[in-house]
Length: 121
Image 1 (cartoon, rainbow, N blue to C red):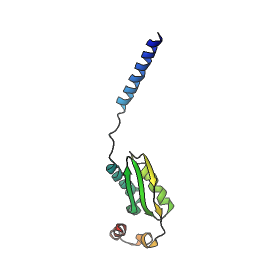
Image 2 (image 1 turned 60 degrees about the horizontal axis):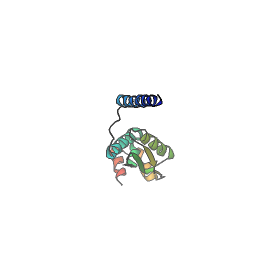
Image 3 (image 1 turned 90 degrees about the vertical axis):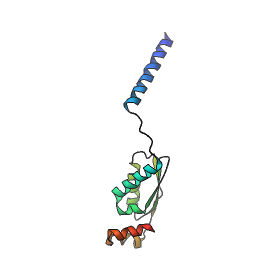
Image 4 (image 1 turned 135 degrees about the vertical axis):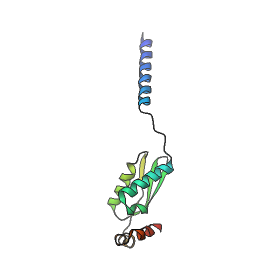
């Protein structure tokens, strides 16, 4: 009797797990290159021009942010935005704060086309 009850329990458990998996199939795994592109797009959409100074590297869903930003608020915002992209397992924020007014201070006074040249360096 106990064996019968254990067998029924196992069958019910497996049936429930199978039904849940069929109802919510797992999404195909996104490649690291695709994920990096999604993160870059999210950063540009959310942060605008300063996102061009942020480099994104991805390995197995772990995102690494590198580059220079003018303030802590922007640094924290970049980490938050990157972490909200689907497929990101974790964010390692290696962004460095810089007080380089020559780059960030004069950006606001330059036309958009000229600002792009600042990001190439």
